[in-house]
Amino acid sequence: MELKHKQILVVGLARTGVASARFLAGLGADVVVTDMRDETALAEQLGELQGCNIRKVLGRHDEKDFTHADMIVVSPGVPQDHPLLLKAREHHVEIVSEIELATRFITAPLAAITGTNGKTTTTTLLGEILAGNGFKTFVGGNIGNPLIELAESGAQAEMVVAEISSFQLEWIHSFRPKVAALLNLSEDHLDRYATYQEYIDAKLRIFENQAASDYAVLNRDDQLVWGYAASLKARVFPFSRKQKLAEGVFCLGSEIICRHDGREHRFPTAGIRLKGVHNLENIMAAVGAAMLLGCKQADTQRVVEGFGALHHRMEFVRELNGVGYYEDSKATNVGSVEKALESFERITLIAGGKDKGGAYAPLVPLIRERVCHLVLIGEAAERMQQELGHLTDTRRAASLEEAVQLAAELTEPGGTVLMSPACSSFDMFRDYEERAQRFIAAVKAL
Image 1 (cartoon, rainbow, N blue to C red):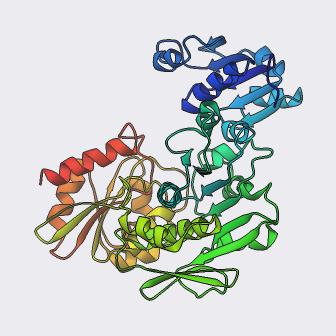
Image 2 (cartoon, rainbow, N blue to C red):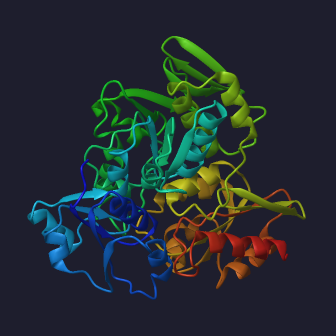
Image 3 (cartoon, rainbow, N blue to C red):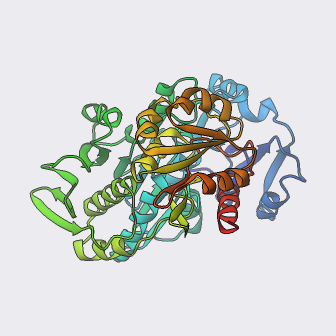
């Protein structure tokens, strides 16, 4: 792309916006950045742009910047229906996401991972497998470093692995992964999308530009995901923990088996540290993608066995009086909580937070079968009690600390206390990490 002297507007000065603005300015584009926050709130971000020839419009947006631009780069937090973006489209201005811009400058094979849950674990594991197989690997996207930072650095990566959110896929045009994985689909972000189908459609765009020479790694056990398999142009490569596959990755007894083009690789599960049924799916997806990208069985097995759980995803905190305490603060939607509940029995579940608009009904059978006590917190507590409270012994707590104390009193030896909220954290905490730290502190104080 020739960007010298092009008028480019960067909307939103989150991390991707800062990196995009810096990259574009370095290519000689006439860059304008705009954000509704003022200079005081953006002091850190503006410091990163010091020395760059960039015009800044802060505390407001100017319509002319949108309608007269040659290109607009949108941060993921800016919704598609923003009035000024709609105006820009009327003026036929090209609007792109940071991942779209970045991959126009990246030549290495790209593996892109999306889904409602498990993206970070799968992305991180795949990155480590590729690196462990000797490939110079860049891992980023929705986690860690924005993809544009690879383009900006000029580093020669041999493989690129990216976690991709639905928000990032909204403004793609030519974004084309060699391997694209869709791990699962469940209701999420209905505070952003008008319907569940809109959210699904955004996720499916990860496959939009793939060809028959590319691969689509799909969860065969997720009927919603699998329902789209026949419509994809890429070669479908399924994974399953419930059925044998002639082609794909599946779990049989104490082995993960990968079959591809008539070859079979077996990976014993006995030495794997990453526990939980959801993580078995994440491992299968990562192993499948790795083998498609040319990894070796022995190196892949070694990395998988050495890989531990990421923070705030079903993380063991401690055992006290025969009760295990697990922190799953990243479980901000119902689908993630379903997987957590499948991994334990005799559960005291701490749930609640800021409601995201999805249905809680999918939790009904698991709560009925596995949850002995339900302790609810936050803004969503009232609605959750109405929809789930009749299924088991249900209590309310005014704070997370009170919920932990109550759970400790209720749970019999041999049981599990699981904090898996099914909601975002913003009603009571800065983010899910603060919620996690508060839970861990409360458990350790028992």
